[in-house]
Length: 219
Image (cartoon, rainbow, N blue to C red):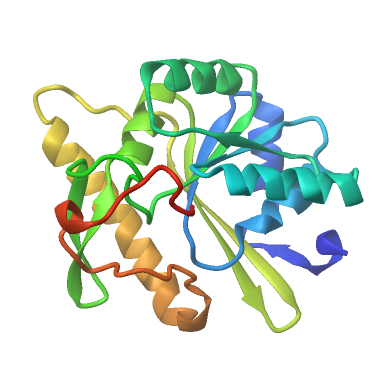
């Protein structure tokens, strides 16, 4: 059913990603419904799609879905925090032509301070550096991904960012801030168009150092 309900902003984008075999990282958000990645996995069975999550509950939910639907072919990767070991594991996956999906609108569940403060919907908000640093470490094509509910189904938007992101040591802070700002502007663009589809239910506009953290936080 999903496949019949989905429209793409560029029907050739995802097949090209698959056929190139270079792997890719999709930086999505809590705007819309990233569960539509399931349909991509069902349509293109020759590519693995890995969604990064930071809670054990999401993995259990994935196992429950698989128990009732064997076509559910998205892999959830649970991590407590980003580490060199995780980055190496993900690098191996993209080198094998696999796709990594991570959200860019949620700060770390374990560590404060690794954020950029970017204007968003009229106020300054903290956005994690991690997903964007990860994108640079993987040395693969990078896309913004938005999955939005329309009257007759879903609109999946792929926006090409770069064939490979570089964060030069000399200008790292500026380049990283510019990259995250670019993402935030696109998130803001779609959040204004689809204001009731941004499912990010916590105090978004606050000092990241003031956020209460524990290892059982929901993704």
